Amino acid sequence: MFWRSVVGKLVITILLLVSFVLFILTILLLQFFENFHIQEAEKTMMQSASKVSLLIEEHEEKSTIMEMTEAVKDSSTKVIIYFEDGEMWESDTSNDKLVDLGKLLPNENKKLDKVISSQKNVKEQTFLPNTETEVLVVATPVESKEAGVVVYQTLDVVNQTKAQTTKLIFVAAGIAIILTTIFAFFLSTRITSPLIKMREAAFELARGEFNTKVPILTHDEIGELAIAFNRMGRQLKFHINALNQEKEQLSSIVNSMADGVITLNRHGDMIVTNPPSEQFLQDLYFEKNITIDENNKQLPDVLDNLLQKVIQGESEAIYEISLQGRDWVMIMTPLYDSNFVRGAVAVMRDMTEERQLDKLRKDFIANVSHELRTPIALMQGYSEAIVDDIADTKEEKNELAQIIHDESLRMSRLVNELLDIGRMEAGHIELYKQEMEIKPFIEKIYRKFIGISEDQEINLNLIEELEDPIAIFDADRIEQVFTNLIDNAISHTDPGGFVTVKVMNNDKELHVEVTDNGSGIPNEDLSFIFERFYKADKSRTRTDKKKGTGLGLAITKHIVTAHQGTISVKSKENEGTTFNFKIPKITLK
Image 1 (cartoon, rainbow, N blue to C red):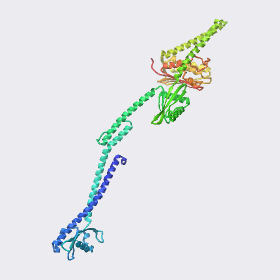
Image 2 (image 1 turned 90 degrees about the horizontal axis):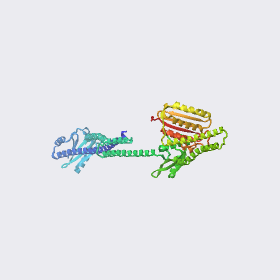
Image 3 (image 1 turned 120 degrees about the horizontal axis):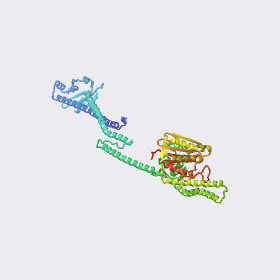
Image 4 (image 1 turned 180 degrees about the vertical axis):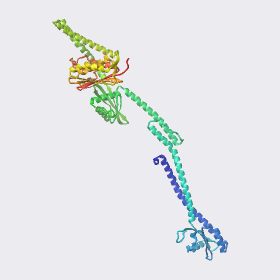
């Protein structure tokens, strides 16, 4: 609104100030001119009375005095002459209110006697008896005679002059108010115009337009304010850019860290996360059966309890946790705002590989020794039986020889798989990529396992979501991946269970999920499943259902990695396991 704006306030202030000054000045001027007009009227009347008094002194003839008095007096006044012999004479007047003045003034002789006796002039303002007519009275004695002159004049003439003067004063005051209003608008507009531009520029700055500049229209304080405003905008832009650069640099550093980083406030809201920490949270949500809400992620109890401990103790806290077979060490440190703890930063380091290295170094020799010792022992025992002629018949010798042959093939397969893994780890794997139709490829694999699954009373399901019917990969190697994953799922699922193979293909990637509701993988072993010689059978006993060298998943991972893809697993013990692998669609090489 206008009245709330700077222009309105400034105009109203100037108008009120000028109006107050003009009001006081008008009152003083009216009072001054009223007194001035009365004094001037009295002065004129006194001059007329003095002239008549001189005429009386200089002339003896009353008729001459009367004629000359009529000539010198003002037509609106009334002159009364009191001669020495007591005769009173009244002059003519144009004022009707003073025509019968002598009849209205029966006591005027006493006043005249007082004037004559005191030889002093008299001036007074009074009302005529029994009337509302206010008159000015001037009386003067005749010095050489016992006579006197009294002059009367009503205030009508004075009031008319005063009214004209008052009208003139009010007109002048109105003109002054109008001029003041125009001047106030001009002045306030000139003052506030730069301020309005600064306000608009401030709104632009608030919206992030830091290149906004205020025009410098004057060289006074407002101009200096505009210069300071423009300098502030440049400094603000510089500091914002510096903060953005530091923020981007910090974000790049955090995102490139191998360790997970989570920044929390006092209320447990996650402010900053990086990819490793997000993977950690996904595993934690999965482990704790927490539904993920992208808009409002719930802070798990583990992190919340640790956060409260850090805030209350104002000290660093360390916590170790195992998720999906991976060992994490979490270090949470308080963040201070002066002396107040405003939150905390948690750094999560995956210690799985370090701990696995120690375990793998110990297990590798035991695994290789075990895998080789059994066939060697069998071959040695059966060959000794043949040498010692324990087998009597040819059929028995052939049976022993067949066992020795099978064990030698098993040793050969073990050595070949070790060589394959060695070549894969050295980067010498060769892929023969080609465009493949997914549907017949998958259905061929499905038919290969449908008989096995039916024999073991396991429901094998195939789900196909093929937006693109073509994918690019090495058919033999990917078939090996499918074989290993489906065979493992069937081997670790009890009769009556299910194995689901879900194949999704689009213009970006081939995505496969192999899910079962079998025995699952213990958390402590989940991080080892892609390592060499990993077996779910801890006792190392060989059954028809759980036979193998323990190298299948290691080979599977290397094949997927060679296709520039990724493979992962999620599992809960006694609930089931899900393997996921993704192969991006790339051009043939």
